[in-house]
Length: 350
Image (tube, rainbow, N blue to C red; front, side, top):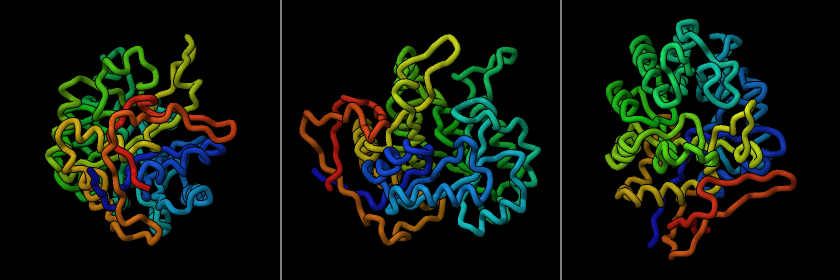
């Protein structure tokens, strides 16, 4: 059995920096993708057009066959003038991280109203605002990792009301409440869904560091809501892997002073994994829409934009006994993928 997908696109991926990027970047195409929407939470974060273009050039040196769509990190350093400059240079979006909620978010925001002049210009020049949809944990208000996303949704509604033409993406949704909120907002608001959130619930990461990510996977009913909206083929919901690699020692160990790193690594297995998961809940016929068409339509990225892109990627159903690699290694760098060692039902036909 074979299926084909037109030019799959990953609209949320972390490619890191330095030598580890040389292992990570080629895994975009290995996983079946030719377009990567690149997150800016490096050290230091990408806050200027020059930094974004330099980072893209570095990634292009590693793998020139991927189209890297670049983003800026929302911070006090960002100005309306920089937004206009970024738009002219082809930068696609601006990513908002609430302070302290995920990897490299110590410089994240605390008040959205402060950035209304930025959002006004983004709406004018048609740049996308990407929202990490959580609020920081706070024992005084009973905010924690399991309700941080629903607690954020009033911010989404307020931003959408203030800037109704601004294209907004609620990133890596994990709850039924988030799905319902995005639907309520209408077509200028979209939502990415990760492969791992289609697979996991809270029981899968509690005590299992390899499945720990931010936002954390929630309850079975929340996972079902994500699966249902994918099965529905709703055009506001599309794939953004949030593939977030960390060295094995950062995932496998923790100390009283340091928790394990938040993030799972799906890039090298992404399209087969998505096919495997969609097939498991009767949505395999929605694979092309979810992994290519809906995201490209929202971001206004034609399928045939890049000449080097594969017109289609073909997947083949595998017999029992096909397993995900245990580890990927390049020189001194190594990474363990999501579901390492588990059986998977699809593979890319090279």
